[in-house]
Length: 113
Image 1 (spheres, rainbow, N blue to C red):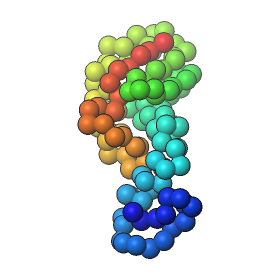
Image 2: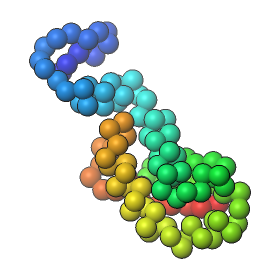
Image 3: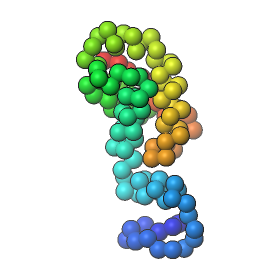
Image 4: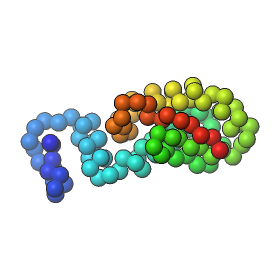
């Protein structure tokens, strides 16, 4: 490994890329759950375009739940769920800060409230 996990002191053993080092640091410090939820909310706002009408977004066990303030916008987004899921999974797969260990899609289901 690139650093000593016991004391969290970085020491030079072998050359490691920053991408691997950042992901490893996020996992070791147990920051991945909160960071993943934050990154998913940012991608939701980009992909859906409904950031103005979104009250709350959280990611838990592959399920993205979004609370909307407008029922009209919620119904429009409901019919676009598959396209939204595909676009969000593509963006999160390319996101360097998003930590995903599984082989399947990052977001498996989208719930609109």
